[in-house]
Every structure is written in C-alpha cells, then in structure tokens.
Length: 249
Image (cartoon, rainbow, N blue to C red):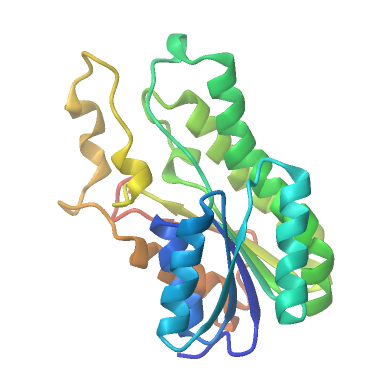
C-alpha cells in the first residue's frame, strides 16, 4: 500500500521501538518522514533504514517536554517536506514503582514526557495540520484505560493522553482534522525491557499482560497507527484503538 504517497509525516520517539517501526511503516507507504527523538543517533539510524529501503526520511533531535525543541522539530518537518499531513506522537517513558517511593522529579518527568510532550507536539503542529486537513495519532496505553499496579504516574499520564485526544478530536473534527490514539498493551520494546517490578512483588501481578502467550510486536502497533492516520479511517475520530491481544477484554 502507498497510502501516504507524497505526504509529510512527523513521528516522535522514532529512534527505537514502536516509534521506529511506525516511521518505517510510513516510509514504506510513501510518506516523507521526519524521525524525531531525544536520541538523535537512533533517529538517524531509523531515517537511514527508510532511505535504504527506497523511502524519504530525515532525522531531528527533539525532547518533547520542551516547547522550543518541539517548535523547532515541527518547523523542520514543514520546511523539509513542504507542510505537514500526519503527526504520530509515540515518544514516551515508563516504569514500575511503589507509589510511596515515587519522587516528585519522577512524577514530573513522567507527566512531562508522556502527557505534556504529546500536548506540545499537537499544539505546535495544529496550524499546519488544519491547513492540510491531516490527522494526528497519539500513543496512549491500556494503562490509560485500566488500572495497573505500581504504575500510578504512568497510568495518570496515559489516561491524560486518552482524554487529550478526545478533547482535541471534538474541538477540531469539524475543521477537517482527525485525532485518534492507540492504546498498546505489552509490546516488546527497549522501553518495556527497562521495566522492573519493585522488590518483593510477585510476577503474578502482571500475568494479564500477555493473554495470547506472547508480547506484542512494534510492527503490530505501527500498523494500527498507520490505519488511523490513513484515509481508510476517514470516519474515525476521537477513538482509542486498543492493541493488546485481549489484555483488557
């Protein structure tokens, strides 16, 4: 499929995991991709892989928690590819910790990256996307829909992404801009590889994370993001598409 032929696509968190898989998916479907990530070497590696496969891609450094960096990344994408048609917000952080042990700085960083970063990317890209009648796909989580132990900050940030998505969808839907989110379950990514349960906590607390007997793959989430961003989802707006293998069924 070449659903994004000639369209400009900006993807945050494109340096690894779901973000990298999403960037490569859009590149394979003809999108002119800008890979944004705090980890610039990772973003450059993703962009190089897209170009090696015959696609068009550039990389830009961006910490989504900082307005100036977000504004610069959005402007870079627009200048490089003549506007903006799709924004995919994938950048995020996570981890397990007992609530009584969460520091103020840890709480603030979780909210800053996952929720504020998603808001800033949307806010700075809105004028361009309204002009192109484009679409936004945010990355929330099943943790934004259902409680998870030892994840108070993460659940709060991702629950915020879900309702941010819905608020923007109804604000801008009649102006031709669709905004949706994906809610992945347990996905095999470098980020989830860093999750560690607090000492003394049973693994049984997380047994529901893989109801199909395996974790999900980044490419499986990327396919859902591409669908929501494409004209195949032209009547889908304000939705949260769960990609979890039945984790919260």
